[in-house]
Each structure stands twice: as structure tokens, then as C-alpha cells.
Length: 174
Image 1 (cartoon, rainbow, N blue to C red):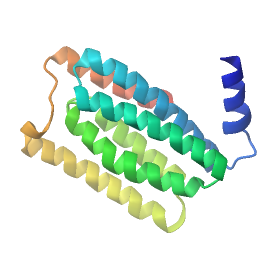
Image 2 (image 1 turned 30 degrees about the vertical axis):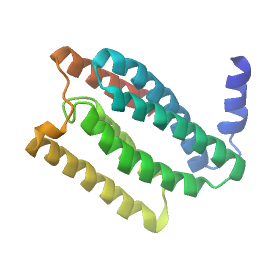
Image 3 (image 1 turned 45 degrees about the vertical axis):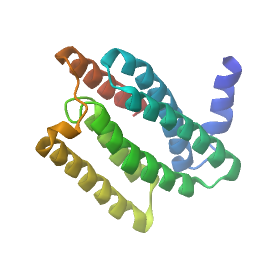
Image 4 (image 1 turned 90 degrees about the horizontal axis):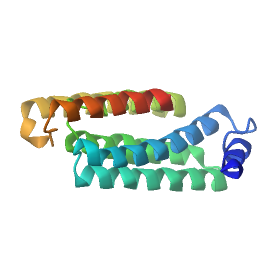
């Protein structure tokens, strides 16, 4: 375990990397830990099979992007993959599979927008940020108009648990 922590500090968080590179590494590490934790908690909140599978797939993707970015140095490509696949594709699916806006996913939307702002630069920054905000707003409206499209939690305790897990995970990652 100490060797693993030493590797993370020496390789993944070393000051030789630019700010965005270190930030991406933190995002990927946090993403893996959060997705695994949420997958396990999904059993207790009745998040559903697909939510658990998607979270595990996200953990694997985070690991692969972390590995690839550190081997290749192609961080901008990994940023765009993360934004496109995780933030624009997986987060909306997870939203509908785990309570919609009656759960913790809106906390992850804030997380996504914030990391997009920090990761991107230049001409990509503003359009991608606006796209995320509009997408997240639209899916909240869709969930409101079509509540049957959301895999709702069965009890208030499940809603509470998912909300706490969501904002705690995002807070710790940030």
C-alpha cells in the first residue's frame, strides 16, 4: 500500500506535470474511488443493476485514461474523452438510473462542469461548458415531465442515502 501511495505521489501528482495534468490525475483517481464506492453503495440504495454496472465501467474507464495519459502524455485527448463519455454520456444515464434529481446525481453535474472549466482551455472551454449545463438542465426537465423515465428510489431513506453519498463523494473529490 505504501508503494502504491508513493507511486501516486511520485508519478501521478509530481510537480513536473502542469496543473491540468495533475488535476486530470486527481480526477481519474477520485473517479475510480467514487465509482467503486457508489457501486458498492448501490446495493444498499437499490440503485439498480445498470447503475452499478455503469459505475464499475466508469471506474475501469478512469483507470484506462489515467494509464494512457501518463504513458502517452496526451492529456487534452483524455480530457475530451472524459468530458464526452463520462460527463455527457454516462452521467445522464446514471441520472435516469438512480433517482433523477431526487438523489445525488445533480452534485456530480456540478463536479463535471467545474472540472471541464479547469481541464479545457481555449476555444473548447466555453462551448463544452455550455453544452454540459444545457444537457443537465434538459435532462432534469425531461425527468420532471416524464417521471416514469427515472428509476426512482423506493423509500425516502434511499433518497437520503444517495443524496448524502453524492454530495460527500463530490466534496471529497473536489
